[in-house]
Length: 169
View 1 (cartoon, one colour):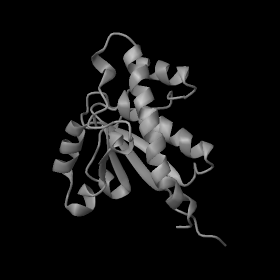
View 2 (cartoon, rainbow, N blue to C red; view 1 turned 45 degrees about the vertical axis):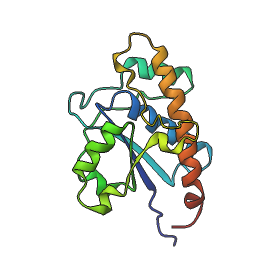
View 3 (tube, rainbow, N blue to C red; view 1 turned 90 degrees about the vertical axis):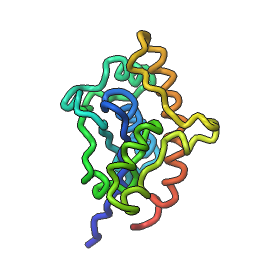
């Protein structure tokens, strides 16, 4: 009898968990599934604040996802908890303000070492390591722009994880 292999768990964190982090969750999950590693990687997301807990993703985020062939309709916002550090292997911040807030919540090096910025994986990002918050923009085009940034960085992130995911754990 084979032992069940625990998936590698990645949590994306943004401000309210209705725009950037749910888009990143959906994108990384799709990338893993397309590589045949969907069972080896678990992607989830949360927000630092509690303003949107239980809500669907922003309609503009869902529309941007749909235009690119993704389905974000099952998403429900949740708030990040310190215990999420223990349940996840990697905690991916969408901008430096999220990274700072997560670092404050971290309980020691074991937690802090799990925090990374999503755009740090994108070689095209340069010094611009913040995924901009599209929430306050009137048009959906900003959501498309942000989604393209998330896709590029998520592919690079997956490229880093893939060799380990293919190895028996």
